[in-house]
Image 1: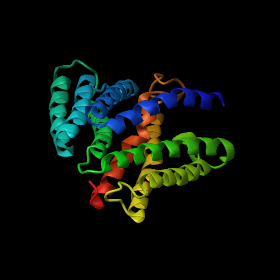
Image 2: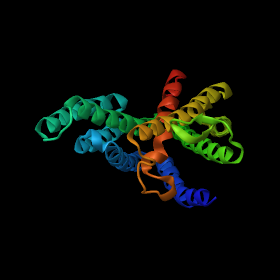
Image 3: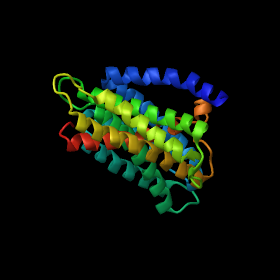
Length: 271
């Protein structure tokens, strides 16, 4: 239970900061996203150091995508991604490292895309135009749905977990924990979206679709990062957050859930 207490002590203040930034939106939300992107890229580059990622290009690319998405939308993030590719090419060409250029560039661009666009989609959700703060509601559904999924999957797995979900990728995750997390993540996200925003509420069925996308994408994002950590032979991406591990360990599910929620909202005419 000490691990759970540690998660609560560290997690609650972080959640308050995140929720406040989401509520205010604008550059406060974007600035928090940039900080998170920079820390996450640092952790990613440390995790993949044997592949010699180009850290400077990673920092510039991920942070640039988050800012570009806020200023001009998701398409402008592609311009930053291409610019980061050129920067990475130049850095790789002048660097004296014992690594194949293809591996080095692929590792760098993968991290930029995964982290930069993962956070970029969260910013894009918050920036959805229109009255009634529909963007804020969608992003709150993502955050609260992912957190509910993570918490209940962890507690449920500890209490009644018996069958391993993916022993080779993440030995502590269980099928029972996954099911409990899915149900609770779906329920919380749906409740946040239900009858919101007041002036043009999303239908209960459409809210269910968005909530389902969040609930399903959350554990996929978690397993995705676990797969990378297993491949690189590390337990956590960092130790900045104590029992939570690194920042990337805490936002891995959000990097997938935000994108999933955005595209479902787009399909429903809400983005």
